[in-house]
Image 1 (cartoon, rainbow, N blue to C red):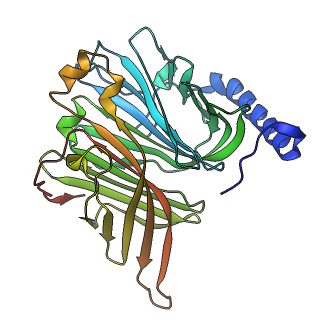
Image 2: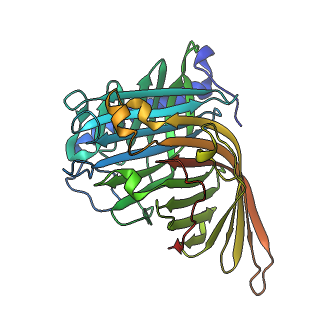
Image 3: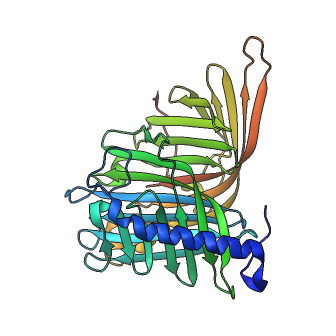
Length: 368
């Protein structure tokens, strides 16, 4: 973990990074005119329909060299108080493990949509995806985070498998990011670098009708991409996928593997929202294990809704979200003229429940 750096004292490295930050900001401004209309699957543009229950959201996970983690969701929904309500919700987790939450909601006409559905402005916070050089800015409750990031234009997005009508795109797994971070109590902002992973989810009906739980695992290792996803329907059917890369080499890309949950622990909202303590995975020539550790942050996702809408929506959904630290290991069977090898490291696990788990959940069939 790199030491925290500030802008003080004319540090040549800090000045160099400030110049780079200025150059990136200039590129952001210049490039705004170069955005094409329309978006194929895998693009970041808004896809929300006119359905009365439609909603969509962009989830971003940032891993910064200062040791901070940023979890942010920008969302648009027709549920609750009127159509086209937008909200922002998330956390910053400090290197010491302190979770600092932020949230803000805005009715239609009080937030800023952008051209081609690639921009959302909620107060002074924004998610700007109008060009290759993108911007994530959080300005809320004394938190000011401003990051520019550039996904690999040749990187392959992935359609994450899920129930019919529930669409998830993995937009990018490790987009390089650079910018500044300032939290309450800091006299000056920090220069930070790191990576950002992003997914985009949309649906025409309430999410609780599609997914009871969604679990994702991301790697924090610099030379490794790990993205494990599992979506569990209310009826118990499960859909999962795995991408594992190391130093640019694709090791596993599959929807055809076995995933077993072992143990259960209370992550902060009681037994009905218990998360597994361990995940074991196995494919034809590999096996893996993910161990879930301490809870980093948690949210009641309905807390952003004003009353009485929160009360009314609670009859159909009681969503909770958790982020946990994790360790993982993958072992690969030897091929001819090769030897058995393994990869291990640290990760982040996101677990979202739309409703509590039933007392005796039916695991159902594993579906690709």
